[in-house]
Image (cartoon, rainbow, N blue to C red; front, side, top):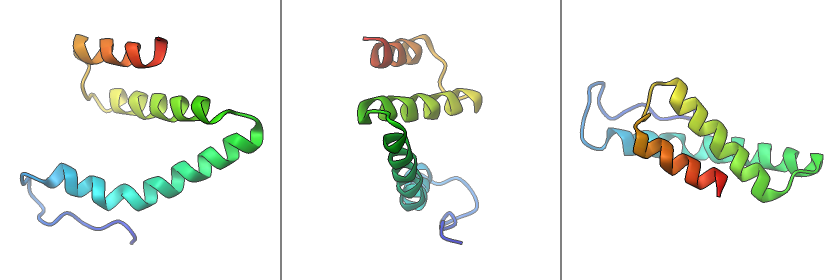
Length: 81
């Protein structure tokens, strides 16, 4: 397995950060593959980046993450300005 396991099976202060570190290499590989294919299909880098971020945010919303009014406002500001 290329993704490392958590340091402990239960919650600990840096668990979220450790998860980011564990996923980083595979995430970058997946994003670079998507960006390359999108570029070959004719999408601009900024369009591709916004789409990837939008998809990640939609995934987070589906996982019942932050849906507060402030978070929604920040997302709208990022994508609709």
